[in-house]
Image (cartoon, rainbow, N blue to C red):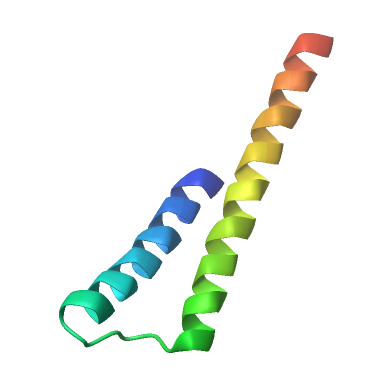
Length: 61
């Protein structure tokens, strides 16, 4: 769930960067871009830590 959310948020960031580069019509400003990338990073870290915790619980049990 968190990995999918991270991919979706990163796709929004990528779309903004691509639109800004090719069409000069980015829909997020600098701060918005930073917050979206930060959210994608946090969601990705949560997904990886959750997967690691599940793996550790499986090997302990």
